[in-house]
Image (cartoon, rainbow, N blue to C red; front, side, top):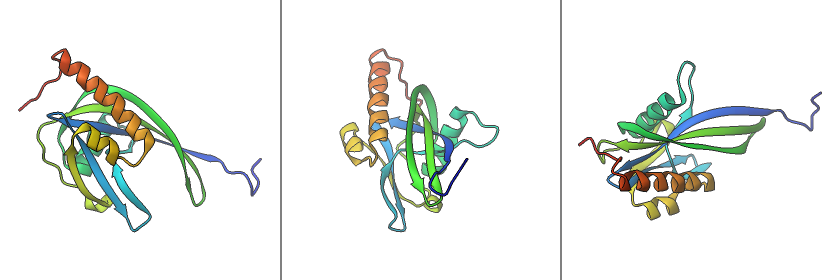
Length: 156
């Protein structure tokens, strides 16, 4: 039974991508009316009828304008955050992706004001959230391994 002191948790599932082009990582800067400001990886909510992979590709394209291809599933991150009426428990599925160019354009409608590709150590220090830094670390390790085995390819 729910009373005024307890809250039910809202569960949300998203997908996103760690996008690499020529060794550099795509990050986006989000600025939401002084409530939120910081560098993030592209991600978003899975829509009805979509797979996790389809969502990741769509969100990368919508938020950054980047055409990417999935190279490998990285794993998932989980975290909680508060909204005025509840606590949200979020699970994000992450994919390692390769872009076809350095082109990107931030999605202004979603309050992204900047985007670009950065060297690993720069992207790592720019990222706002520890869970995204951890995913970047995993993804970059996979990228280096694929590259060493000559399984990482550029389509251009």
